[in-house]
Image (cartoon, rainbow, N blue to C red; front, side, top):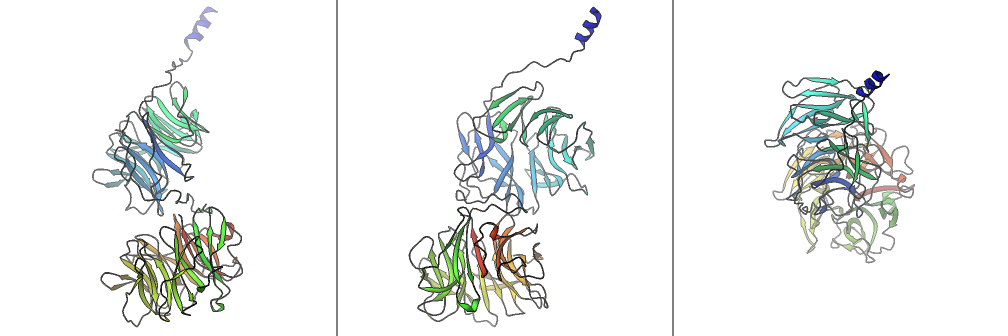
Length: 577
């Protein structure tokens, strides 16, 4: 009897002694809600200071944060344009983050520093790649046909990587580039491997796991802190927890997410202004779900063009307010094709001047009770299609088939293009205001071209034989949208993405050959507002929002039922301010 009891006592598993709550004298980085904008921003804090560093940055949805080994830099991912890109922020200088992947037109996700801080590993379009920071050399580490490799992380000694592929954990030896899978006792929804010393932890759903055993519950993110300690958040609370003793302690005062830690007490700089107006960014995270817009849209509608009954409206997405701004205008009739100034305070548009009885260009201050200002009151010209420059200092437009621009400070007008057999129309500035996109030629010999303001030279970009091409709209410094007929025999308009280097244009995914799609207006993250005669339209043309690559498309009636009517809704322009 005595021997049996003694044997049982000897076989008991030793329980590690609690280490107690550790001192946290370093610096934290974390995500938290910004009460001013309603968006989620990156904050850095220590015992001396808490600083919101990302509120003015133009990239969206910054996440997956981690410190460099020396603690002085913060690595993260964010959306900019159509893609997820990777950035490094210098905590002690506060300079605008450096984009590491600006030249890569593919999604770059889930970056992590190497233990020596010289390299960054990440997932690029489903393959694992490594970036040497000093030389910017990029090397692929995997070439799997599955293209499902993700969440790479260096081992503690930097000799190998762990990553997730096809819901399994894999190890990649960096010397031989040989890969092997890790057999787990439980495999469900794997993500986010994290090394704690020699132990490899990972997420299974929202459970932090070690070798198939659950350690803690977390809100889809956790990070290594030091020693045996990790950081995570659950519900309304942030924790530091010990993976050996399984003790956990509450940290930080408010709700925090995606917490990173460095044991360095940093000199946290005030961040450089990144140029975004507070609250101006739409928090768009999906390319298929209806985006939650917060900006404003100007548009017009009419029974038909020849009815001369066009009216102009502003819709505020954030307030869900629709206003007919042309209701009391007496100096202009038939207003259309409105375009916001860069600061969102004005619109320019075309309409029939009451005094001139001809098409003129107008300027209107939003919210004003004053009448719009006629910028081109002299002469009986056809002044049409106005667009603000990106600086807000000028407006370009078409006058009797010529490109023109007017300087707003002195109202000085300049005819840019000389007499030409081809009509030039529908101008739109490039983002640096040095050139003007336009539609040239006559049906069916129309084309898309670029006017260089300094040299007065023209470069044809697209000219598909036998089709009509028109209405180009700049997206960014590299690309633009325009409309083009399906073919010489099918005259339905399609929306096309073109490029300033004249590389092969792309058909947008939502187009169908039995309806018209036109009047493109870029929104963000591949979304655009457009007009179409789809079968579900209420009138001739209705307004829609669509994603250029996923093909998702929604009627704007989903935001407000009054936006689309039995009339033709046309000419939308959107601003996120």
